[in-house]
Image (cartoon, rainbow, N blue to C red; front, side, top):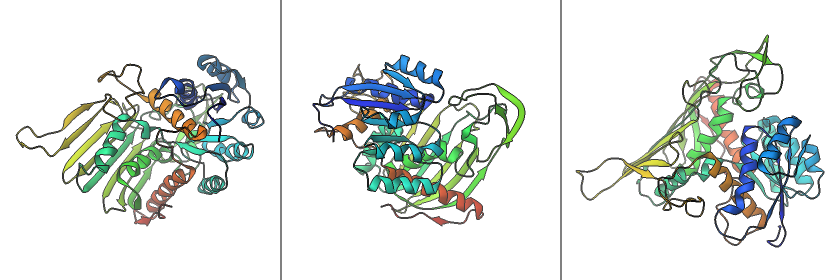
Length: 398
C-alpha cells in the first residue's frame, strides 16, 4: 500500500464523457472530507484521440496527454489509473496495469464479454493492488440514505423493488453507429445503463437469485456509420452507409431476491425526453422510499407515524444529515443541490482511500467480483429472453 507520506500519482485512460468525470473527481479528492489522503499528482490523461486528450488534460490540470493506454502502463511513476474506454478494451488494459503494479478503477460494465469479466475477477483474486469498479450511484447521498432506511428496518419487510433507467441518447435514428451499438444482446441498454440499476437494486435490497419474463427489443435496427471519432453520446458526422445495431435498445424483466422480494426492471436508451432517468421505488410493509436522478438532491420517504391523519410521502431534501453530504460539499447546507460531479469525486476519494490505506476511509468501491455478478445477472436476463421469458437462476453471490 502507498503510505500517507508519499504522493499518489493518478492517470485516466479515456478522455470522453465519463473519462472527464473521473479526471475531475481526482482533481477534487483532497477538497472533501477529512485530512489523511496524500497529495495527489495529476499525471496524465491518455486517449487515442490526441486532441481530445490534450483538451481534457488542460481543463483538469493534468501534466500531460498521452496517445495510448500502453504509455500509461509503461510509466513507473503512475500509481493508480481509471479505465474509461470501450468495454472490449477493459480486460487487456486491466491486465497490463495490474502486471505493472498499478491500482485500477474500471468503469462499468466490467468487460465486453462474460469470458473477459471472469478473467478479470480471477485477475483480482491474485492481484497485490486495489481493483475497483465505478458504480457511481452508490455515492448518491439520497440513494445511500434510502439504503440506510432499509438496513435500519424502517420500511419493514420489503415487498417490491421497481427500478427503471430510461434514457434518450439513442432516440435519434441518425445518431452514429458507435461502439455502444456493437457487441450482441445484453451489451446495449442492459450493459450500459442496466448495470447501474441492477447494482443499485442489490446495494439496497440484497442479492438477486433469479430472473424471468425478460424481453429485449431494438427500435432502431440500423444506424449511419460515423466518419470520425464519436465522443460519449454526442452527435458526429456520418456517412450515407448504414450498419446493423447488434444489441438492445430496450429491456425489461422481473427478478427474485434472496429475501423473497420481487423486483421489476426496465431499461431503455430510446426513452424520448428522459436524458438520465435512473429512478426506483422500494416498498415495504411499514414504509416506502423513491428516488429519481432527475431530482438528485432529494428523495421521497413515507414511514410509520404516530398520527395517521398527516400520513403520506415526505420530500427529504439533501443536507448534512445524509451520507456523503457533510464534509463533501463546500456549502454544507440543505437545499444547495447536488449531482454527478460530486458522486465521481466521492468515488475517486473512496478508491484512493483504499489505495493509501487511510485510517477512516469512505465505504469501499465495488470490486471486479461485484461487477462480474452484475454481468451474470445480465447474462441470465438475456437467456430468459432467448427462452421466451423462462425463469433463469443467477449464480450465488460469492
